[in-house]
Length: 187
Image (cartoon, helix red, strand yellow):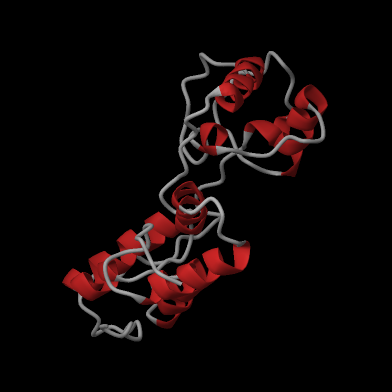
């Protein structure tokens, strides 16, 4: 089996895409090469691929240069229009007050983050949409949560296997080339 290489500026894009990388590893690489480490795992990986391909470094942005006032900074109510949504403690507090203590940010709500919205939806609409998303039996897992998707696929194909066996399979698969999706592994 091909061994997982160290992530360096000489790593090819093909090698980079062929292996699983923790977000922590990607952030360390970015900081060592003066590339912006802001954002989610997919955005960071895209910047690294650009750097490995072209040598272009997307620099860290100044947070004071573009100050956005998020909806939660002004206070959220059921009728507040969704314009600058953010998954933060204030937003969580609003959703907990509407939904209860079992509330968790999910892909439905994450889809509103970090982009300007039209204001046609209100936070009351988001509460309804969130509750509908929980009733959807075919919940999707965002791409950056490879481990969660791997677990779901592993247990679907191996319902009698233990958590230890799942974790052992994950350790094998994330070190192997070809991505980090579920594959039949004999343990």
